[in-house]
Image (cartoon, rainbow, N blue to C red):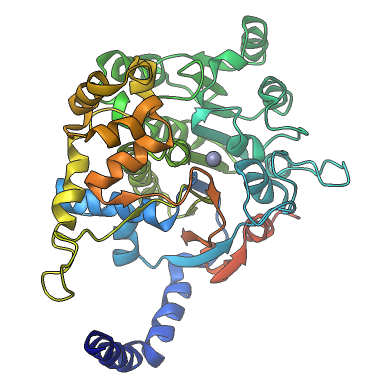
Amino acid sequence: MKQISTSRRNFLHASAATTAVFGAEKSLLANETRNASANGGKPRNVIFMVSDGMNHGALSLAHLYRQRLEGGDTVWNRLYQERPVVRALVETSSHSSCVTDSAAAASAWGCGQRINNGVINVLPDGSTPQVLHEKLQKAGRKTGLVSTATITHATPAGFAANVPSRGQEKDIAVQYLERKVDLLLGGGRKFFDDDLLKKYQAAGYQTVENRKELLAGKGTGPLLGTFSTGHMPFEIDRKRVPKLDNEVPTLAEMSRVALSRLEAAKEGFFLMIEGARIDHAGHANDAAASIHDQLAFDDAIGVAVAYIDKHPDTLLIITTDHGCGGIQMNGVKAKPDEEFGPGSYSASNAYFDRLAQFTRSFEWMKQNGLNGLSGDKLADALEKYTQLKLTPEQTKLAQGLKGGAGVAVGEHTGVTWTSQNHTGELVEFCALGPGSNQFPAFMQNRDAHGILLASLGIAV
Ligand SMILES: [Zn+2]
């Protein structure tokens, strides 16, 4: 009882202080942000950044990792501290479920309507609305799509394609060409066979297949870059495996090339940049993979911010389509009966910092044979890539490197998950630059479509 009354007193004290500090002044401050001169007017260009499957927990873990283990802060968080950023919470429900998938979520941005999960811009009545790329193209804008997933995956496709099923990635690859999407960079080479590649080249596209070719490429014409057969590797693996580091560009590098190409667009451009694999790390319950991909996404934000600083006629949006896995850093007690007080959760820092010892994703471990191991062999192999000493029970749980691996590892790091599925929470949205003052503080994901077009002066 004593504890309850103390925390209640603290709560009352805190809320009185909060009212004093944030009462009237906070809303004024919010209006100042929204009314900042940089946030009014009409943008020429739009950079739309998506950290796929990122709940606030994933954002927080990347922030903690940078702060504790690398020094400094994420670019995303610094924007909130240093720039007049307009923020919103976004509801992400689809037509078919309160928990969306990436297809329905990207389609909400792509066509401004709620549709069924699994579908790309086909309405429940079977009709196919015009999509954002087509509307922008009519208005003279160029469009670029950049992703660390297959470039034909649900999120990029949601901006430019209409197909009844997100699995129709070959059809999406054909639609991109038919609709002349100006720039495509990502994974998914398997969906572009030789015949289709020739058609792209005949239509004037430069095609590139590795980091060197991408970075050497100059020019302003249409560009197709596919850097892996399927999804691009997780950043935690990409940067440590020399072959991957040689061949596969980072999201920041793809973003830089995309911006330098599209800059020449006479009437401006729309560039979508997706950190796609935060979602996949969520499905795999792989905390280290999530953090490193979120930080790679943050590096790409840095590229975008440098661009808007030079080109203040560009609207920057940074958001996510939904949460995935419910990742969270939990307070860790040094002993079960640890009391609340200055020493509370005293093991948390040391547990969290163990994530710095991880050198590979679960996916890479699987691809390299660890999913066939059990017992001591698996424990030794996992120790090699995580420095963790799993107990026999934890090793059994990790066998096959499925969801149980996330649970076993979580007992050493304090990071746990609510599921291996998408989550239905409200998500973060922020905007900076001309047109950003048009986004309300609370909206549905589909609202962004119309607001964006209206800010560009294009008919919805
Ligand atoms: Zn997902």
